[in-house]
Image 1 (cartoon, rainbow over the protein chains, first blue to last red):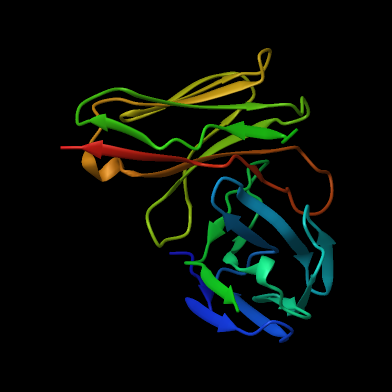
Image 2: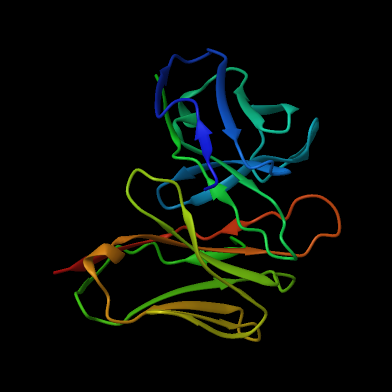
Amino acid sequence: DVKVTQSSRYLVKRTGEKVFLECVQDMDHENMFWYRQDPGLGLRLIYFSYDVKMKEKGDIPEGYSVSREKKERFSLILESASTNQTSMYLCASSFPQGMVTEAFFGQGTRLTVV
Amino acid sequence: QKEVEQDPGPLSVPEGAIVSLNCTYSNSAFQYFMWYRQYSRKGPELLMYTYSSGNKEDGRFTAQVDKSSKYISLFIRDSQPSDSATYLCAMSVVRLQGAQKLVFGQGTRLTINP
């Protein structure tokens, strides 16, 4: 079974703190993604990576950065956390099989910024 | 305008009913259409995918794509309480390089009442 593991289920951080969200996958997937999920807005793509050290901005990258130093690990960084970054963060990974990309998701990290 | 629109519900139906979930989209370049199911406090999991227009059936689930109308549907027959979850439609374009990005709808929260 594919496993995508996010380091924390719940996090509470203070405004202005630097926050690291970690994600590890165990299936040698090339692609990794960070989404945030908010009520009424669905999943919105923050950043994604298709190879080690390669990254692309998603739809809402402002206030975030990412790091992918190893294939299995993809980190999301909130440079200076703000209250509007309170959300559920979901990491996903995928390996293209033919032309269909099934994304496997982690359990999510619920981040509260106070 | 969002690329993918989905009624967030909530939708509540009695056990055994036929459920219809729908999404509309604006990007005619989308070629792959997926439905993910997300149980409470879990990450989304792929339920079904279809390519281009037409129907696809898997047990009690039928996915339907009408590219001319930019409209996709998921039908659940003989609905069960265990089908209670949030259902998210997702779509992607074909990319020659890099990862295929998934664009998600807002998700519809479905409850099947025993």
